[in-house]
Amino acid sequence: MLSIPNSDGWARFQLHQTREYSLSYTDDIPFEWIRQAIHGLESKNPICVIGETEPGTLLCIVGWDTHILWEEDRDSVRAGKIKHEYSDVNMLEFARQLYNDVSTDFAEWVKFNWISDSKNAGERKEELERLLARLKELIDGKN
Image 1 (tube, rainbow, N blue to C red):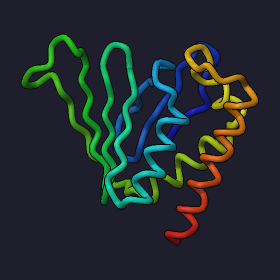
Image 2: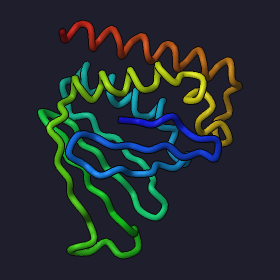
Image 3: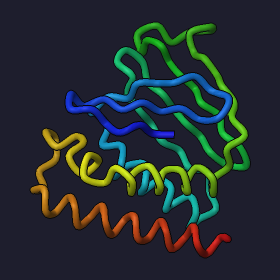
């Protein structure tokens, strides 16, 4: 679902049946997306995550399945400029893939969006470990 983030602050995102999107460092993907996944699994509300594609913005809404809305250019939001894609990935599968991708490349995700975060590397590492542990707890509880 998520690639290893590269050193210039970009990561790729793709779900089953969708195209690949390049996500910018302007969103702190591991922290923001994991918090949203935790909230979704705890509250049984859809997971809703955002990613900047520069230009454009991706909105991913995950419930029983996933809908991706992509504004190719914020300045021209009008009929036909918002693209829609569907994936059969549900909340639990989305959370599982997110957990696996961030855990597998943990060190790289800790550094992602480092510039705009006031926390030091140790604080980011500890917080991401805590968030991943909670997400794993919720995933395991749903199995």
